[in-house]
Length: 242
Image 1 (cartoon, one colour):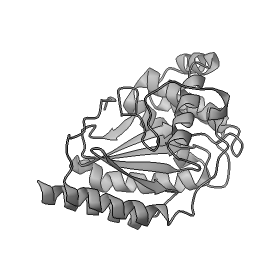
Image 2 (image 1 turned 45 degrees about the horizontal axis):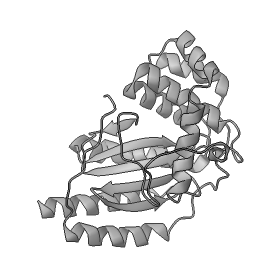
Image 3 (image 1 turned 90 degrees about the vertical axis):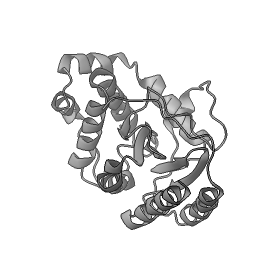
């Protein structure tokens, strides 16, 4: 699948807005499972149209798992080295296996490396963006899944294995090494981390759930049943409003 621009509906029924308010309260106050950052974003400033509390609109630069026009969009800001992110990645793969196939849920992965806690995380983020640029959306997701699958929850990523993961995702090793060595993705990683911090993320994982112009936050590595309940609630509201 290729990255695509997300399209949002112009109006959201009041029932869904109310449901989002309840979800926001329920999820925001249950956060305990997250890593807290000093983000890599301290290094630079970016110019963008991000409003306080809202991420930028999904566009062709994003990596999307599922239907890019899905009514429910889950934008995750994550750190490849974060143990809670590994747990949550498994949860999100379960969510997409169940709800992504219906076309009603899409998952966007954005970079939020916490450099103070995980010194290698920015370089891994840069590597993932190189794979995405060279191999496209599917290669990015294959590489990302592989990192989380292969890493022990309490151990850092074996960065010497990253070139092999890139090749397995369909990317030329020489092109991958050239991209990573150029550091061309460094500013993109910094910009993504700055965005996360600006919209309120103070730890990872941090997920913004969007339905049209309405948004709620899943703060931390909430368990599968919690995330599933949120998605089912939103799907029921959307179906009831049609």
